Length: 158
Image (cartoon, one colour):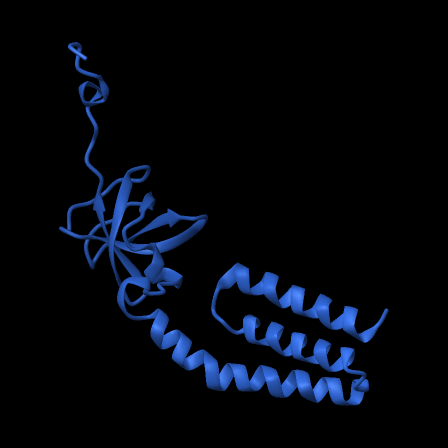
């Protein structure tokens, strides 16, 4: 397999990794692999392609990533990831949730997290809650209101 194809495969792997977590690390490694592929197309030996990969990746990580992350963390296009990205979503109580003296647990996206009730009132297992905020690694949750069956009916005059 030629060096160009090998570098393109490496770049593709880094692109796939980036799509999986969007932290903007693997993207710059993919750019470095593409730079090395261009060096291979130009006929550079492998001994030069590897430093091209390293330099392009490091330059991207240290020169382009910080301003990109700063831009993504402000304004309308704010990048929210990790546990903070779960605020505003629904979860299910797995262990009774109470106040600071009796924290419980909720399950969201297949993971369990420590949780506290926003008003200190206990919330029983199986209850759907809304995640209101994140304090450290603990979610503050509120029980979702019950929907009465009558609210789901269409008016008869339509």
